[in-house]
Length: 142
Ligand SMILES: [Ca+2]
Ligand SMILES: [Ca+2]
Ligand SMILES: [Ca+2]
Image 1 (cartoon, rainbow, N blue to C red):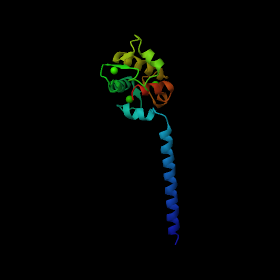
Image 2: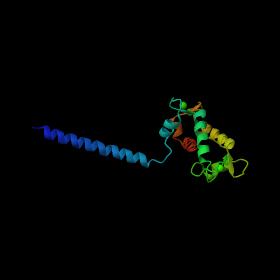
Image 3: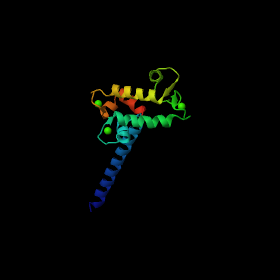
Image 4: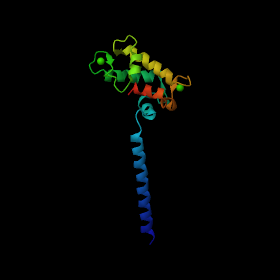
């Protein structure tokens, strides 16, 4: 005779769990991209839990091709919109021709990687990717 009550409690518990899950989901959706976890899941090709310079450059090269909408081999400020601030664009374009060539992009990626690699090992871990410098690296890959 206690069974219906147990069932009711079970349903309540399940409902409570669903509310918690949906709240967590919403909180994550509110988090601004980029996410270190997503970047690691997408670009850590050797699955060692960190991004090394080769992994970052491979992802950055793929993004370069994707962003180069007019396929002229360079990225202008419009093509890079949202991936670099104006100040970083100027830094990435040392010859000031208002475009970033693939070589210039890779030099900038390497600089961003080194700036984010706080402990000076050869990899970026989740904590390093969560810093402002690390987020800059993620934006150069996605
Ligand atoms: Ca790795
Ligand atoms: Ca272009
Ligand atoms: Ca590191």
